[in-house]
Length: 193
Image (cartoon, rainbow, N blue to C red):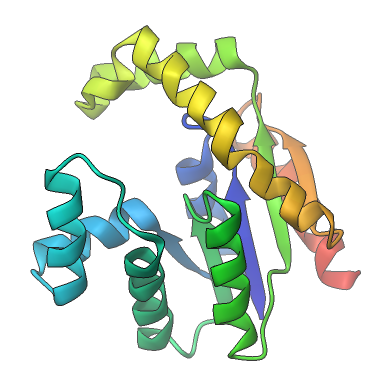
């Protein structure tokens, strides 16, 4: 099984590249944002619990998010693997993901990080705001704060997998096909390692 973590700051191109990777490797794309929207929209117990935290402006606890991930994995037992997008965001989440996979005799194949400098991220997100309708993409100070939070709390997750020799960094600047080619090359190498 191939279990990839697609990693990078907001606006690095994870969603765009995940679509291409799903096609090439026949994987299931698991985005925590999509999971939250689906569970909340379907008014599941996990969705209602997540919504109760979100309505207060609080972070959804890891055990709720992991519960949603487990449910999604259990609902799709016949896939060739998973692309985790937007998760894990903290070391405890990485450890919980590792434990969840280990319970099924699996592990993370690779964490592939898209490397894009801050100025390019700001430019991309301001541009995306014109069509996304996301207010957090339209304000440069909010974007810079999101980048700061990413660097302080999320970027360290790459170090967790670096210790296991599973972290790979790919230049995320260039055309979609160009970046995809770099990603596929790294993933193909990690599959034979």
